[in-house]
Length: 272
Image (cartoon, rainbow, N blue to C red; front, side, top):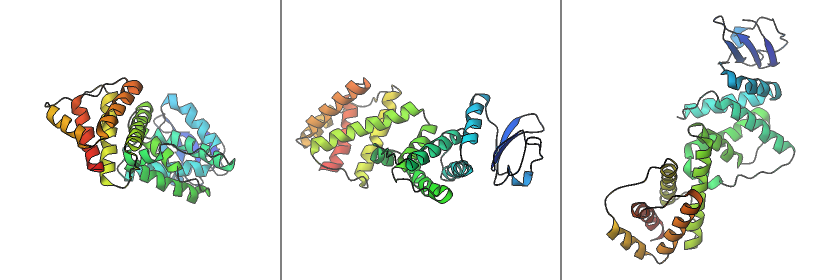
């Protein structure tokens, strides 16, 4: 194959024998190459068949990004897949973009803390672990020691790949808003490593996704259990009232008594 365009030492475009245009990456694949030069196929590490609507952005990113940023994005994508995350090649675009922007912010001394770090760690533990690995990998590949909260941003990228970004953000907003109300009502901090806190946060995640998909919980009448749980702690009525008001005002959804019961059960595991 011949090089059509050389983006940097690690990326070139070419045309496969079947006529499809591809982006080829690999260490040194573009070194000293010019359009029309033969590509050393032994140096090809990755081949990308890019959909036409994404091609312009991908080519621009390859032109502007450092080879190390491209390679570390490939490393992160491969590591995430090895750890059970089902991700499409298109995620490479947003990973490259985010890594370049994060490094740029770091070099300019701009701090942009991730405000939903605790919630992301609880809601998306697998993605967050990959995010932590990614931060260390960026240091290894690019020589840039990014702040630890960058793991949250990368985890959000990974989580968003399996659902819409809007759904992911709203799920985090929902969980954070509810957890803030719970902390404030009971006057306690919630231990993120406590199994009951993890279960509560996981429940909030799936409750949020049901709400956004407009799937209302239905089941047996739980009125007796509902009343018992409300009376079990002096703060339960206040907390449920505040949660209902928050969810109604922010997400236009009215919790029913069954949904309240499941929230109260999780709260009961933590507070008594």
